[in-house]
Image (cartoon, rainbow, N blue to C red; front, side, top):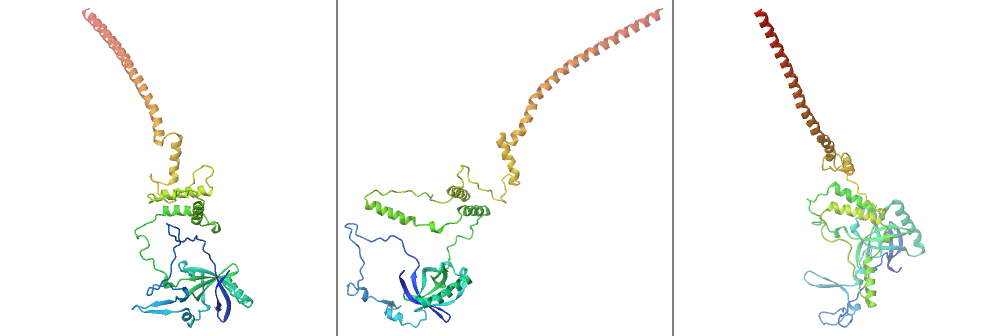
Length: 360
């Protein structure tokens, strides 16, 4: 790796000569601007606005414009002569837990390499001290014309430095958060947790730039004179109307993508504990009702069916009973008539006998 800065780390009275190298690289595809009509390159030239002549880079210097419009030139030599201890030194200010650094402050990343054989021992000492403490070092350093804040930490067997923004360079998130009236229900949070658990961990090494690959394919197709294929985005666009339905569908889709639903069964979305069922009572009490419906109709239908069967027989019994009543009444009337006739006959005989005895 090519070093972009040489200096030293100041660790108390210990000085560690180091070289600074970029820890990251940009893989983005670079484009040039051309004249569409003839394909000619479009170039930017530095032109002095006073004499309208092009100025070479060697004659170009920095300058500061005052509030009244006065321009004050500041050369690299002027900046190099500043009495700053951080001009060529990474000055460690202290050590803090890594969690104390707000990720919003993280900027560029660098590797620090021991510069020379004598620097190997103090370099390893600082590295192992950082590793054993579990902390990171906060330091100041100067690079590209200004003093910066940095964080030193251990990556494998190397000391890495992250450029940090100064605390006053972090904007407060005023007016960014949604309105305070927005409420998130526990059921929605439970489904969001289920979706997070289904998606699981991510292997960072497998992530790559899909957009860059698509641009490379586009350029290759145009260079070969082939038609450019247009692919529709598979992600739905627009507003989410039913958040719960969207979360449940996301859980199912995530499980299918992970191969958990390969047997053809629906993804198992567990009901949220504590949610009140619509018909009252607990969800477990409602389970037998669903089983009854599968077996053949609803509970109301099953309870009504036995009542209807006797109801059909009831008229027959009643009719038989009604038919028996006139027969019994007729027999009773006949018996009563016979008894009455017998009584009348006996009465006649008695009266006749009495008359005979009287006449005698």
